[in-house]
Length: 181
Image 1 (cartoon, one colour):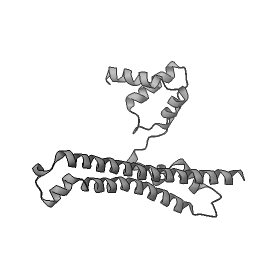
Image 2 (cartoon, helix red, strand yellow):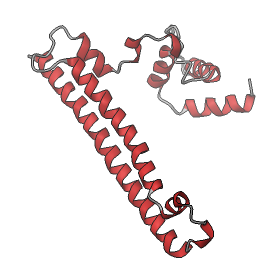
Image 3 (cartoon, one colour):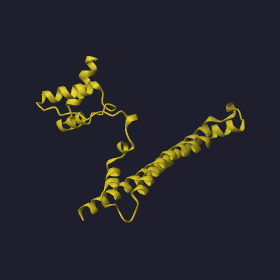
Image 4 (cartoon, one colour):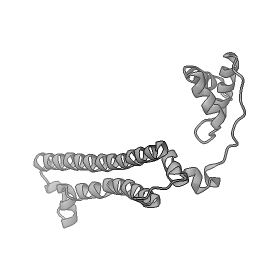
């Protein structure tokens, strides 16, 4: 163990609240936290006179089941005793996954469209030598196209991510209202 690295990890983790350290310790996510981090957490908890609880068994990512990959709201939706009458929970999960996939695909599609529409790429595709391109005029046009592409990507991506988040919020609201009724 590198002593200076351990000291740095210790100093960073020592800034966290005891409850947060206990949660990290109990969860035992070795994919997210190093052995040095767990050693530091144990030392910090001992120095704070906290009883060190048992840790969950660490399951590497390749051994996790599909249920382990579900988020809390997805588990609530699927495990609920009283399923919703107006929609199928699996449809909601599928729509949410498709929205997130579309958001990622929009980055690739708009990125390719933007790059392919720049004057430099257009001239190369036509076979025009690069030396004959006026850098001043076409450089500015390329910059405008790339900025436009970035704005388009941002607007599309964040709009779709917001739509996905709104869908999750609506499911949570509906779930919580059923739970209270």
